[in-house]
Length: 338
Length: 284
Ligand SMILES: Nc1ncnc2c1ncn2[C@@H]1O[C@H](COP(=O)(O)OP(=O)(O)OP(=O)(O)O)[C@@H](O)[C@H]1O
Ligand SMILES: [Mg+2]
Image (cartoon, rainbow over the protein chains, first blue to last red):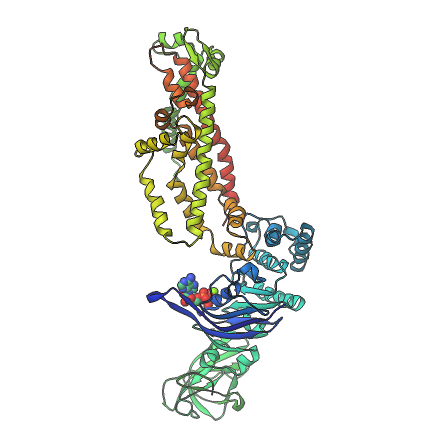
């Protein structure tokens, strides 16, 4: 078991005119046995960060330690990590057993121990029935398990996952999510899990790193990230529908942005006056889109109500009140939480 | 071809059959001629289209040599077949080894002037054996490799085509596979042996067939650099049976031709099964 420390990690691709700074000095301390999810929009550098921890990508600046070893100059195989790739990267010509055993064979682990470890992993993942099959003879979900199995048998200090669930259908994804959680509870291995899916992040993470354009916006538990977003980016990235960011609310002070989540706005007999612009019914809940009546500027306010509530008419005027303890204030220029 | 008009079906079949006939006829003629005696071939005009009865005799002489019925001394082709076989095996094996390794270096390693090296290899595509035959002869002669297997095969081994083929193939192997192998602790040669080699089996099989035939059919180069009879390949042997001062025994020539055709045909048939299997089996 080991902790992971990122100390002002930078990554630049190319050099000279084509230089492209992708990671802008990320520092984080991941505790031993913790499950940390890195989440952010496409292209923000999540994979790059993970691949630097894995040793597949050179570190331009800063330091990465696993346990108490600085690993900057170590080969991936020397870092005591295992990685699960998005497309699983199973060896196509080897059967499931050989795929899982390959790393151990190279490490010259005795054959009976390899067998024992592979069998154990196969039992955990319930893939024992197709040890002799080639990857192409497996379904996507089964391949995913084999990829996990290959990681488990190495008994690494750290698991690295790069969007391992994104090729699965919604149902299987939800199921596998639970299995990964269970696996982590059983094995307790420090894990770094990359995803662009906020639901995945919220459900899996003990703590999560929210990234945007190579910068770590926030590092905290899902509750912290949801309840106290550190910036307007985090506020809108996590939560669906996103948090309302309002400059023209009656309470608003110049130079600040007021953030309120749609579920923390209630339709009341008085309060903010809005004109109903659009309605969306999503089964158990309804989204009401309103615009300011007082003409201070054109801003859309989303309100989330229960499906049991009376339906406001399009074009009519409604009044809403935010929950006073759920207001978030952000600086209008930096976007940081105040 | 979704239309079902009887006329069209008839026409297409007729064309296909005509094609088969055009290709098969010379082969049939060769086979028939090899079963007749030399007199039967030369005296009947046109020669008989029916197999003769002299096959065993003719093939024995064609393979092992001896005094023919017409009285001329014939050198057997068996030793020449062996020479051809050895060269035709060294060439594809050497070619595949060399080009796989060089493609491996070009695709997977970052070294100075990598692109330059690639282009230099690529440019040699424009220099087939025939073009560089003079200088190649000089080099081989001064290295004392005339009349050796090395001399017969090495100049034909250097190959840009195969390097290029493997380079293209390696480029299609997903990066994640390389990375997975790195994490598993496989060094470069281990990755080459355990992953690239098995994945390339289809290409290797195809290349082997093509290059085996290429090596087997070499004529100009052996003609130039072999002077001792025990290093003649069989293709040259056929030529030597024809003309000259002595009487040409066409039955023996044809039998030798058939014999010389067998190994390449055999390689194609055996390997075909194998690389079709490879095509079905591997998936990146
Ligand atoms: N080998 C490379 N050379 C140059 N730029 C690269 C390279 N790999 C990635 N990048 C750039 O680095 C940035 C971050 O890429 P990265 O793959 O880490 O994104 P990501 O957050 O994983 O996105 P996604 O969710 O789409 O996988 C992107 O802008 C990308 O264009
Ligand atoms: Mg990515």
